Amino acid sequence: MTSSSATGPRPLPGRDGPPERRAALAVAGVVAVVALSVAGALARPAAADVPAAPASATQASAVAPGHTTSVTVRVEGMAFSPSRIEVPAGDDLRITVQNDGDQRHDLVLANGTGTGLIAPGDRTTVDVGTVTSSLDGWCSLPGHRQMGMTLEVVTTGSTDPAAERPPAPADAPSDVPTMARLQDAARHSPAYPAALPPAPPGTEHDYTFTVTEQVQQVTPRVSRAVWTYNGTSPGPMLRGHVGDTFRVTLVNHGSMGHSVDFHAGELAPDEPMRTIEPGQSLTYTFTADRAGIWMYHCSTAPISQHIANGMFGAVVIDPAGLDPVDEEYVLVQSEQYLGANGAPADPAKVATGIPDIVTFNGRAFQYDAHPLTARVGDRVRIWVLDAGPDASWSFHVVGAQFDTVWTEGRYSVRDGRATDGSASGPTGAQVLPLLAAQGGFVELTVTEPGHYAIVNHQMSLAEKGAHGVLEVTR
Ligand SMILES: [Cu+2]
Image (cartoon, rainbow, N blue to C red; front, side):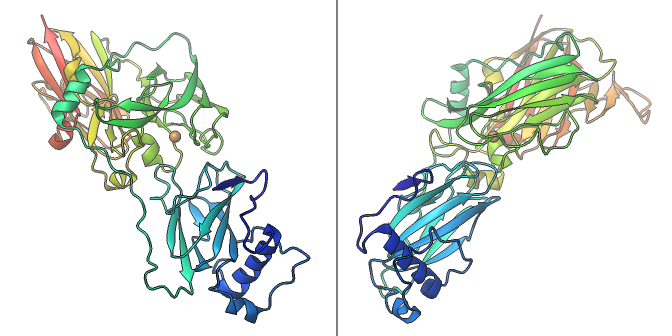
């Protein structure tokens, strides 16, 4: 039931003659009777050969069948305007959606009709059919409905007391896998490489980030949409030194608008962080002026949804004077909020901030199945970043203490001494606490062989997958 703007609205099987005549009646009906509250522009002007019906006559025909109400609704930001339209019960309804937003949207209605995707600047008309009772409409892109992209279609003049609003269809959520199933799935999946190689040579780094939308098997029975930079979530881990320049070409091979925001650079967000449409690309250049482990992520609205679906990664900029270590790893924590099988994150769950699954580097429990490794006596550095979108991370290694902790611009302890001199003797840390988007690193020396659990010490999150192992051998 969709017609595209390129060819104009498709004629309906007529009850009142040609579309022009029906449109003209619709004009009169909308203006005189329905009193559209926010004056959505009409789909087309009245045809010259059809006189406008007198208001009184139109009034009388308000509930008579056979009229078409035509309305234009604009997308403004993350809302439809108007967000409520009135239509006489029994009218045919045609809605033209003009997308004045900066990314793709659609309009679907509870009766199953919809516009299909509409690119920014385009418009599409949907024949909703005969409307006998009020019904809901919304944008079906992930999270957009929850951000307020809803349209209320309200019938007026109904004499049928049974005309009630039909319930909106709901996608069945997939079952949340148990810990045992997640652990089993991790054993049968390759691990995201946690080892962090040194920065590549040179001071200028060129990358292409291609955005794709895929489906990931969480377990054999549960799958989720995953939106990626270069096919993995997290995306590539970049590394360089203070003063290096990064030139990243973002290419959107997805089905909707995406973008990227590098915390490692400092520049006006307007141009490089803008959302680009499928098929488009942009080049994002930044200079890393400060050391740290910096998040990058898609910043297209709703950002929580784009991060929850996998669009994040890290840029490591080494602090000057970084000590040599034997093993160096990077872990990025993120949460998953399962929607229907194969579907993006459930926006209602994202809004609660209570995840179904919490991961290090994109898969629950993967480093239990494929541990990080070290030898007795090794010095180990673990870089950590909390990608969120929401949860915090109480980063702890069971059985170990951190004698060196660096986070958000400073060492708090280094080589077992408080850096501010406040502790006269040896000291250290048991946790590196991180809010969403915070990062840092710890260093430790492992002195005995064994299996040291790496956890989020907010234990309910560890039990949802934020758990791994550092396996130490002789
Ligand atoms: Cu995105």
